[in-house]
Image 1 (cartoon, rainbow, N blue to C red):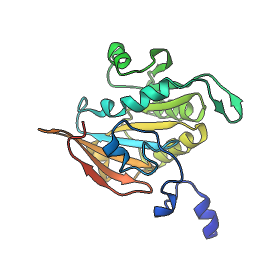
Image 2 (cartoon, one colour):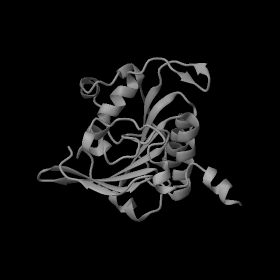
Image 3 (cartoon, one colour):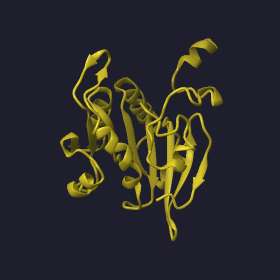
Image 4 (cartoon, rainbow, N blue to C red):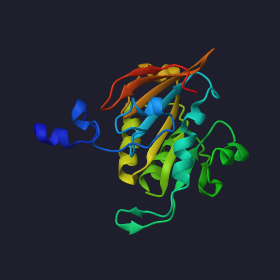
Amino acid sequence: MSLEKVLENPRVWRGSSQVGTRSGLASGYPELDRCLPGGGWPPEALTEILIGQYGIGELRLLMPALARLSAEEAQTYCGEHTEPRWIAWVDPPFQPYAPALQQCGIDLSRVLIVRPKDDSELLWSAEQALSSGTCAAVLLWPVSLDDQASRRLQLAAEKGHSWAIAFRPLSARQQSSAAALRLELQSTEQGTRVHILKNRGGRPAVLDSLL
């Protein structure tokens, strides 16, 4: 395979040559946006958030961006006019609390909750939701996510112009992943520390007390 063919693959990192080529989705946290190429969450890509326990700010970190996505008006997708897209939650380990989501600015009429039977069905559901073009974002909580599965999610996000967010345990840090962005969240006395482990087109960084 020629070098030109390799570089055509959107999953190949070309360092600073990719910085600024695509606008990111503003996170609502300027300190974080300054660390991310494009000034925000990577669009049409897989983001992984590694946590040791639930409830340390992982959802609060996403709320400003998700609220903006849920409020988007009908848009053009692949040349066709479409309805506003869904925010899909695939197998959350809890029942999302509607009043809290609404208070954060989430349009509840655009929220879709999927309860698959097992982890294989979870990954299939997430892949279908991402590639369909009907979801602006897909949140998922897989039991496991190997490199091949993460690549499928990345490709599905690109195809459907969607944002994939996978929540994983801290033990996944040693595993390879096709995710464009990997964050590790840690609870400290000062707040929640965000460690950028992998940042396609950018650099790793540590943000103390971001939340």
